[in-house]
Amino acid sequence: MPVIDMHAHAFPEKIMEKAVINLEEFYGLEIPNRGDLEGLLTAADEAGVEKIALHIAATKPSQVRQANDWIAAAVATYPDRLIGFGTVHPYYEDYKAELERMATLGLRGVKFHPELQNYVLDEERAMALYEAIGDRFIIMFHMGDERSHRSAPARLARVLETFPHLRVIAAHLGGYESWEEARKYLYGKNLYLDTSSALWCMKPEEAAELIRAHGVDKVFFGSDYPVATPGEELERLHALPLTEEEKEKILYTNALRLLRE
Ligand SMILES: [Zn+2]
Image 1 (cartoon, rainbow, N blue to C red):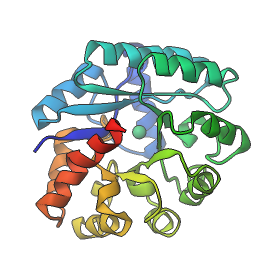
Image 2: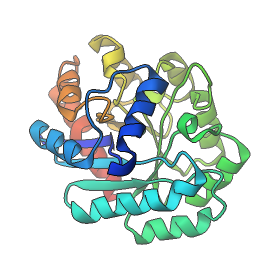
Image 3: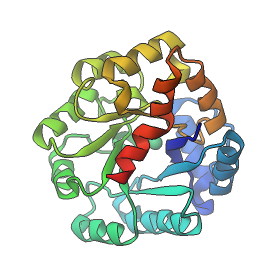
């Protein structure tokens, strides 16, 4: 069965070590993988993952351009393997020009992480940016933080009510550790979820129930590398009490359909 990993990270060598330590500290996790692009591609090869959506999120406005250049260079090096998700910070002044540049660079999506980017998902400046993005790019949101509520599911519901034509993926089954809120505000609506950093937090039956509650045609597989390897997450996905047909949709055909739009 072919597989697309819709949620993976790798970092430029220069900042990699610091970036992984920051993630470990922020989430209280131990991350066993280095976070380099070669490591991601090797892990994907071992798991038989065909294509990988590679994400980066600029934690400061001043990092936006170089972060997008790095993603574009990675995609240019591995055009058959990588799907580029670039970044714009909501406080980056010249966001309209950067969106044009991202389209020229061949990037397909924009990744947002309200906690690490230090903004609130539905604040005014971010809303203007989402409006400018429109349906040109797929938007991937990190979702869920019970400590800050910056990326709370209810906030994303407000964004989608204001801009219903956005093409949104809500990561971590709609809200890391906020699954009941995600169910209430997001499930069944016109958006996608991914399975990254969620399957190891719950029982297989619970994950399968959440996936079906939203709709199995609107869920993608994601590893959240370097938090986990694609192989580890594939094992978890295959352990869910879903049919082979449902798994094929999550692992491949749903993502293919969105990427061909
Ligand atoms: Zn992510």
